[in-house]
Each structure stands twice: as structure tokens, then as C-alpha cells.
Image 1: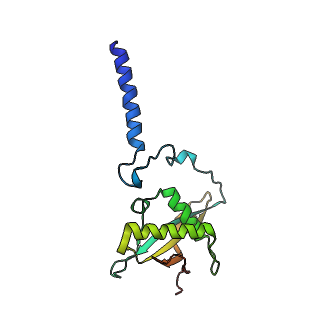
Image 2: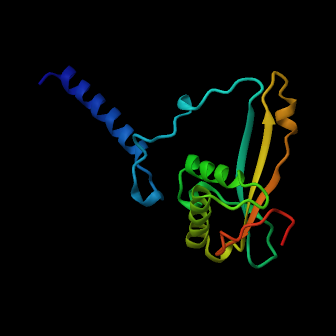
Image 3: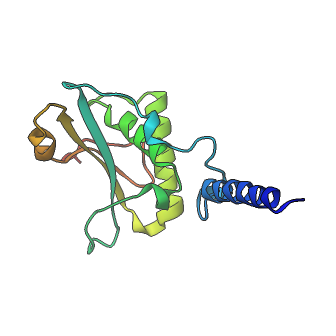
Amino acid sequence: MSAKKAFAIGVIVAVLGIQLVLNIPIRGFGGTWYWPFTDFTMYAGRMAFGDTLTVHRLRVTPCDGAAEARLATSEELRIWSRRLAGRLGRIAALEPGEAAGKAQESALVDLDDRLQRYLGDGACSAEVWAKSAVLSRDPSGVREATWRPVLVWDVGQPLRFRQPGSR
């Protein structure tokens, strides 16, 4: 075998090896593979001016009461960020006084289970927060958007959710 062929084979093996390493999670997610479900930005949906962009976050309050509420990340809940965003979007769509549908109940139960399993006593209550902005040529509206609480539940009782400020 010539040196050129050996070099070409080496380059191909190196590129394929790097792709393999980048698509296998180093930690978390139960050893599953990212490929072919890697979350590429180029596949994101297109938005136009006048569309409303809403972002959701999950905040948890520890049981000790001394620490402030903090964000629960997709890494510590061992869920892909897009799946977490989808579940939070379903939960945030609940109207005051409305009963949860099957998809919303499933999202609440799954997130509550993950909070109990992976955060343990580090989460006493969970809150879904939302931030919305209308896309326009003037970016000041996006900058001025503020976070607001949408839904609250006590960890361990996801189906007894309530609107913020109510008991």
C-alpha cells in the first residue's frame, strides 16, 4: 500500500472517529446516542416579523427555605433541551381553572418525576416561567420582555398545580 493511500485512510478514519466521539454523550442521558437526533440550529423553524416568540424556564425552590429559587437545567434533569422546552410549553398553555389534558398531565408527571429522581430534596416546589416578545425590526421589544411566572406545583404532587400567587 502506498503512503498516499495510507494517509487518506488515516484521515477518513480520524474524521469518522471524531464524529463518533461528538455524537456519543460523555455523561448523562443513560448512555444514549445523539445521532441522528442531534439538535441542529439549521433545522429550526422560520419566524417572521409579527410572530410571537415565547421562551420557558423551569425554576425550583429548595425545601430548606434559605436558598432562592434557581433554574433547573436540562442536563441535571437528564432530558434533551428541546424536549424540556416542549414539555414546559405544554404546561404553560394551561389556562387558569382549566383541567390538564393527557399531554399536559404527562408533561407534568414526567418533569415532577425527574425533579424527584435527580434533584431529590433540592426541589420542594417547581415553577414554570415564560418570557414573550413580538418579533419586529426594532429589537427593543425583545430586550424589554420580562419573565413572568405561569404555573406552580409542589414536587410530588404535579396534578395539584396552581396559578402563581394562589394557594
